[in-house]
Image 1 (cartoon, rainbow, N blue to C red):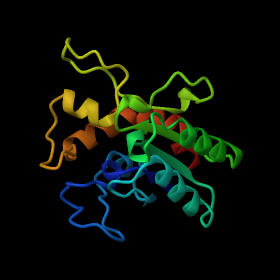
Image 2 (image 1 turned 90 degrees about the vertical axis):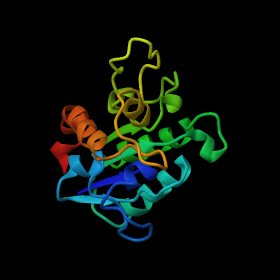
Image 3 (image 1 turned 30 degrees about the vertical axis):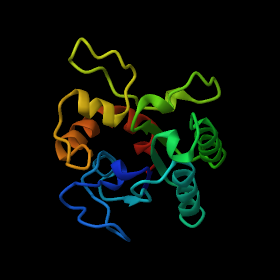
Image 4 (image 1 turned 180 degrees about the horizontal axis):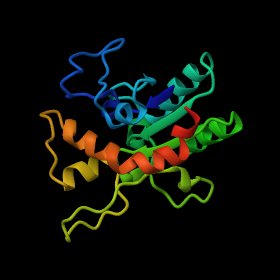
Length: 182
């Protein structure tokens, strides 16, 4: 069972199979769902901040057996903070203490800091686009999708093809860190 946490990106807002909010309204066409296959639990929700992402994951892990976790961290400004290090480090410590395999990524690279306590080897950050003028390295999923000109919904969410291609990019790192344990 893969537990995936995040905001509207992992929820799958604007994807064709996610027509509403509420219980079980999430998409099964996000990159997290593609990676998980049949054994998938989404605890993401549109518009939430990193503190709520971490809280939702811990809540689920308190009542299901140890599992793999994929977290797509969102903009720290949703928590009225400059960075998300506090929540990232807390989740990292929790997962490692409980010996739960995990992979972190992000919507935007604004969560990437120089904090030496963050285990960056457990992250997937997206590659540069093919545009030579893009200087933003590394990238989050949203940045990568926009810079590579994937279709974006009217509310600003990358659509199905971006999620499929992201799953292909992440697959090797995901398999190395998480798939072996789920």
